[in-house]
Image 1: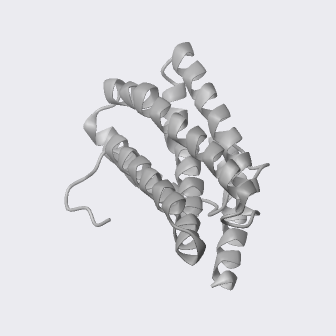
Image 2: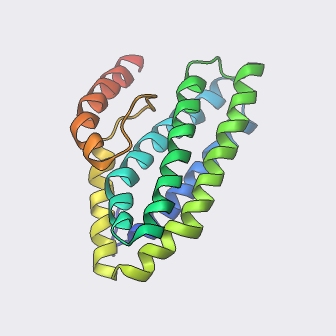
Length: 182
């Protein structure tokens, strides 16, 4: 997305949440190769999006006090649960009954998580962060997404420090694997 004006982090992430919802719908409504063509970008977007939030957004919100820290912990638990389910889902045959059942669970978990962020995390950011800081966060999110793994990993870290230490190595392996698949 080429920006002629700076986009703030809340808007950037909200737009990604909408993209995720659209990709879930595309996977649910299409079968066979068309469903696979929607599933792969969904997995990639979820993986890079969540890693970027863990590296940029959650550390910023943690500094807003005990209540904010409790909210962050709840969102991280949601992410970790969805990440583990998505890892299992990625190994299944698209369109199988097992896939469809787990896909519905992943979709519900991710949509609930996005709604919780939009209701709890994003207002905190908007209330305590000025426009220039929100725009800087967008740049940081884009950079983090560029270094993030492109697939979920059950044992991946959820902390900013963990993602910065391990993430680039895992991302490199994911990107090589993605290139080989094509």
